Length: 82
Image (cartoon, rainbow, N blue to C red; front, side, top):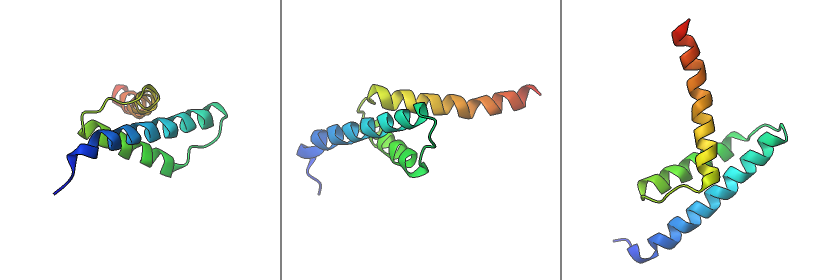
């Protein structure tokens, strides 16, 4: 049996940590530095946990996830038109 009373606090902490990871990814990208894959994996896992618990993503998390999705879509779209 799980204690649901602490769930909102846990999800708030997940959101805070996800925002910190997203901010770090944005800083690295702006500096032209590579993004450590483990940081992106942590961000995706946190974003999924938030989504599964109906918690809105912090803006920086939404931005990073959206930008990555766009970049993933671009090669697929280019390949379909050729």
